[in-house]
Image 1 (cartoon, rainbow, N blue to C red):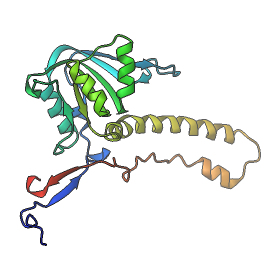
Image 2 (cartoon, one colour):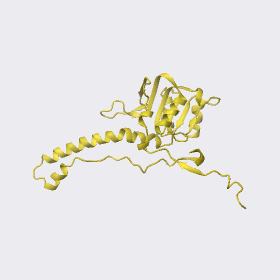
Image 3 (cartoon, one colour):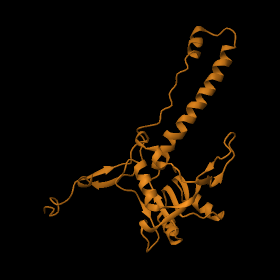
Image 4 (cartoon, rainbow, N blue to C red):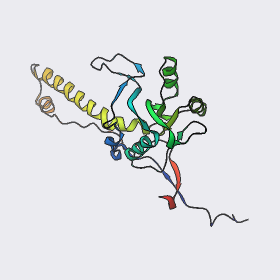
Length: 220
């Protein structure tokens, strides 16, 4: 029997959030908002006094949830949508945010540890949380924004880690070159290799989050 809805069914396409090269990093920073931030869980890393997992951001003045959503959307190239959760009986337009817990990837466990340590925030911003974790959050009056797991990591890889790796590789290669040149009897081939100071740090353009958003082409 023919499908009676076949002719009426809209045509859909799968949209993934853009790659790191499309991210508008300036849109994702806090701009002129006066704030303080610190790790959720501190770790000891030589040369990085503020190292740690996740971040807690506390704003001096509250910002509307919709303003935060707009800035995230702009930073991601205005995707057609991403999951948010707000407390029952509330709308996104009436929520004001003064504090944010941030965790790239999957933040549920880290946010739980944050609460156990007495840190309370208005908004959880992460890649993914389980149904029950999100439900528990909104029952406590919090909001949740999820961008899918690796979408919350990709901007850091391109905007922060790439430059850090380039600086560290340059430093280490210079050290190796100086040590090898000081040795006696090195070959011409090795000397030629040591004279090459060019290298590339590439961030994958093939990687993407497995999840996308199915949208009607009529809405594109």
